[in-house]
Length: 323
Image 1 (cartoon, rainbow, N blue to C red):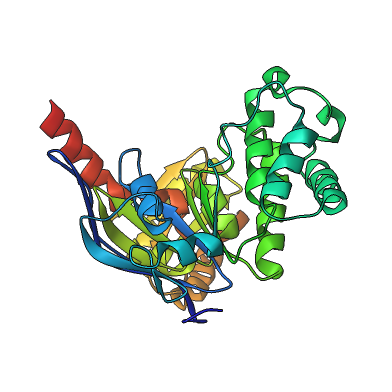
Image 2: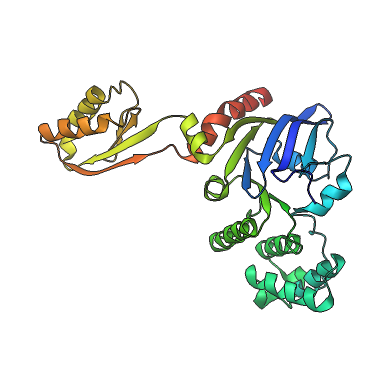
């Protein structure tokens, strides 16, 4: 069925211009089949425009995109059979119930009457909508509409699923359910490409992440690779006696050679840790000075720090330009 079984998505130099705005300015992406790939970026960075080009909903002005080896422009009909896009089912009949809408979509996709009804019931249960199954959509809340939209887009469980900010507007419990659904989809053979502004969502789900800013991919890699790219891990210490904080800071600076970056707040001392081997020397030095520790931990940079470091300058330049 596929021309390329290894790569679900291959995009090279994608460009999309709207008037004077280069919304997408040369994006390259490679999404391995059977993975969850996250696209992060500030508002207006070009995430949704990129997804729409990959999903054959927008024609690129330059560059190329392939889905399982099929050209998204020249072979768009084949590509559309291989993908699912959230949002495409938003124009449902408001007067019909959730069950009736899902049955209609299932029938349109070629499922038999009994199979369509069974699929509708299964999806409504999975998305926590069983109790509201018979209510007309006009009585649904925003979060319920979002869940039904996602359920409808998964009826056929296509090989590649585009999820554009799939959990926006959902409460924490429903978000967690959605995460489990996304993981299940990948376990059963689908590839998922999701855009999100929730950094914890990308951290939880994505095998690899691309950070897009001002229409360009400014960083790409696994979560750990991106965290490593913006700095070293940090050491967090809490001393038992608050009066020991100044001496502890001096000792850390001497032993870890941390000339800058050592800080203390609410009794916790934080220091950059470029060389993990030196931590043993630090503990020996603190013990020799009679300084007792209440707790100690080592933390990698958070994805929030990665995001702000990588996109912060771009956001600042945008604000200066608009000012």
